[in-house]
Length: 144
Image (cartoon, rainbow, N blue to C red; front, side, top):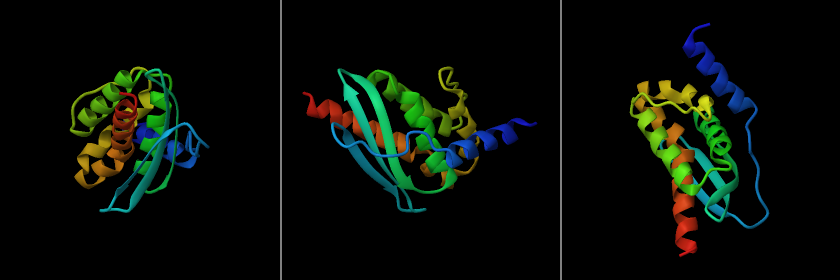
């Protein structure tokens, strides 16, 4: 099996079996973002306590890339400090720019590395990560 085939399988697994899809009842930071060029929408909820992302959930609709990326992101950030989560988002942005970035803690993210060959799809892949950054910024602003 070629690497591209493996990556496609990982992406489709996250799309068909989305992790952390759903909503929290309370105690969260909620960020709603959309990608007007293709219609992807996400509502990300983060439970942050003492600088740790305790949990993350999302709802939304969109292409397999945007929803798979959200699934992967929510898995990757749970239990991380907000600084580590921000670092993951920065590294993901570098991955989308074609840089050779590795995610040792959560290798599924690397399956999205081929997206950078399709500039129109980069916004799909980064939507959830942009919501993460915004959510962390809002949480930190609220706790100043």
